[in-house]
Length: 115
Length: 112
Image (cartoon, rainbow over all chains, first blue to last red; front, side, top):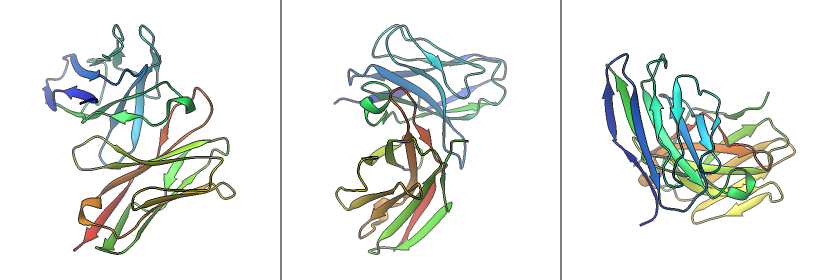
């Protein structure tokens, strides 16, 4: 089956620790995205990548970092600099960015809780 | 500024009735719109999309209407079922390299 997988589904972290969230897709999409969702809120873009070895900051990139060493993988690291990291994190992909890319396909999400 | 917003945070409908979910957008340059459905604890699922050169598009039990004059988008769900209960988001995109902007979402609750 083609799709996007995220792991783990639930993640707990102590304050001051970095944590990395995994995102893998086998859709052969060039573009990948990370969003953050807080209760009762829409999705806010953290980072996106248009192609391997390239990524751009989204609207709320502070305290986060990403890498795109492989087309199918786009891991997100939540660093200790992120002041309010507890949230639901969603990874998505599309054929390309922008209008030509069509809809974004989303993974099942990772719920991160900072203890 | 640019924003995508929904008129109401919640909508309750009787099973079998039609549902209409509304969305306002402010960027007149937006040329692509998507409706997503998100069930509790899951990622959003694509429902239907529409480009700005259209004013209506139909899918299975769903219809999206676009009124560019008043910058308004709506999602109509026919014969609403309990499985339609979820949060619905509209999203817009403007320009070749721009990113999707999501609204805050509206909760659809279906009464048995």
